Amino acid sequence: MWDAALRHLTTAIATATNLLNPDLIVFGGHLAEAPESFIDHIRAGVLPPMRDVLRIERSSLGPGAGAIGASAAALDQFFYSGMSR
Image (cartoon, rainbow, N blue to C red; front, side):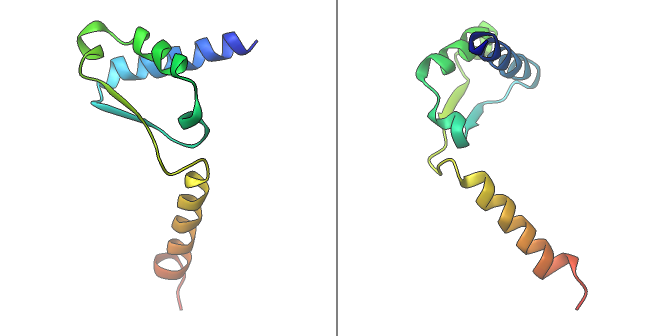
């Protein structure tokens, strides 16, 4: 079951990479802790011309970065732009 999930996830990321042609992909949260084989599966699915220029990095902000960013956005909306005083 996990092998199928891994295969579908890496295929989806590789397909999005082939369509959008980014220079850099940054994995954050728990994906930043994924094994190197995960990155290798994605790189194998990317078309050869893009494989050489694509950089895949891991975020150094840790698994809680998404929650911290979401709470910061909510606080910004509440205190500075969303609420009338």
